[in-house]
Image: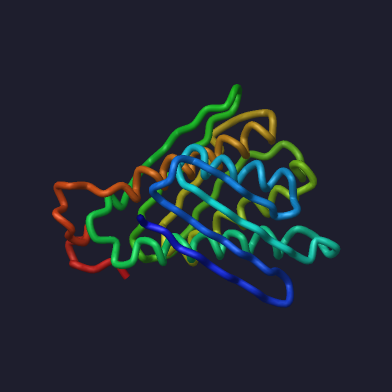
Length: 196
């Protein structure tokens, strides 16, 4: 079983996270932010990961620290689970439509963090979350997940649909990139022999 447990405690957040990459899409998520819980559930369901996440954050200030730190914790869990990344597929692309919206995530678990996020929000917030924090979650996840992550909302009108398509695409791309490729025979998927 490829599993990890992360505890992240700061003066701003207290996070308990369990991740099972080889799960069946079970999500037990409570961040105190309903819309964000709904988005993280999409990663679990469509990536077929089991995620248990409990967060207490300084929501009396705003949702920034909670969303940022959940991204950091999830990325850290991914890094912990994958170790030296022997045998994984490593790169993946996912397009996901949701009604009028279309999102794409292109992912390389290269060990070199970089995020390019392109969105087309039509309002400044979604479900009480500033839309800029959706992008910041993806950036934070890429840093500790040590991933080259390109995420785009190609078009859409409804912000809920656009965000949900984006999180579903992340789940699908992560599932594909973390699959074990039997042709690799346990080797690191890099011409350098290491992903760091």
